Length: 226
Image (cartoon, rainbow, N blue to C red):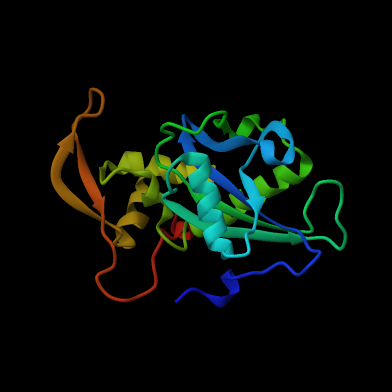
């Protein structure tokens, strides 16, 4: 049963917008999906956004906006922040709800949409940068709370590939040996019988995500152990 809090209705006279900041791996950093918003007369790229419809919850609105921008659903979607103001200013809504989502593969996008590295978002407005910053903060807070990094790797992967994803999400380098100790202590991965050649070194063993077998809270990697 959906959480009642996810069914928000904007009181008469109050404008409510849902923003979705979508992240995907892009080289050595994360990229954000930017789209023009023709409905609001905006041609400059910005994270996809739309008003909440009367027949949907916040979560449903975020999922719809993400699908419209991507052409498919993201692998993970979660509310990041909520901002409000006492009065409407210019074209900004009075209440703005921001979600963040993860996309494992950049793939084929809708027309005019593009992935832009986090380091190249200088064209965004101050409010849009605030939304992206809130999404980044919320995403990083989730890394050691639940295993969201596995949403960005294939079914089987090397531990080096997984570490690279964690480093992208956290925005910092991790010590290899400490990362692997923490990973195994979390019991989040299990070895397969497959191996993959990586460069000129020895082949690397492939692993898969090992979901909990009993009903208990979702786990992440506790980086305070690193």
